[in-house]
Image (cartoon, rainbow over all chains, first blue to last red; front, side, top):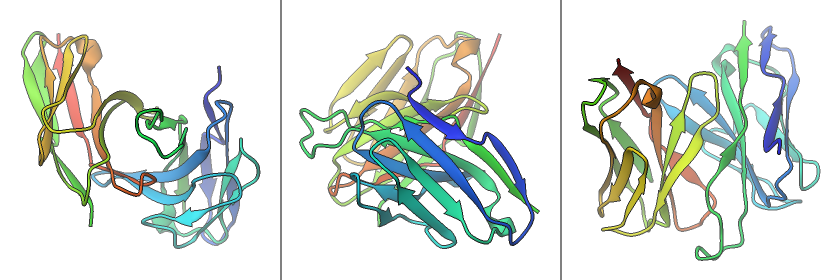
Length: 118
Length: 110
């Protein structure tokens, strides 16, 4: 089982360039997430999609856009990259049915994308 | 606002030297508290979920406990392969957002 797959693993951009980070999961999960991880700050939520067809802002959405293409895929787009967006980006997914006793609440993470913006 | 802090920031142990990691949280209605392990260059991997004060979970050398304000990850007789960053996260009442702490970087020396 592949789990959560992210591409690319590494990327270097110049300020102002755009790019899309791809994420796909093969676990039939409803919810998908994009986090960024910076030293000393933990994982911070950028956007999430509770179910196919919906997306919501997280803690740090500015400068990003997302698309929930289908149940499997959730992409993150940087329209005009800035040095402050240098970070490691993680995609995650989980089953979400709203009832704790039958829901596997835990997040499954991809291996991350290391992005540098010069 | 939901917040999670972890201490210490970094911890070095000798192999076999037991210790505990702390996760303190503030959340308006805890739905779940999660512990993850993260190895360098990889995504976090799930360890435990705790739902209510007094609950305990164990896995090999690790035991997680929960009170109303904090959680502890106890590591008994650690081995070098336990070296990793340990992340704590809380899930609030809306069920969708997970707030993560900054992590504790654990090094176990042989």
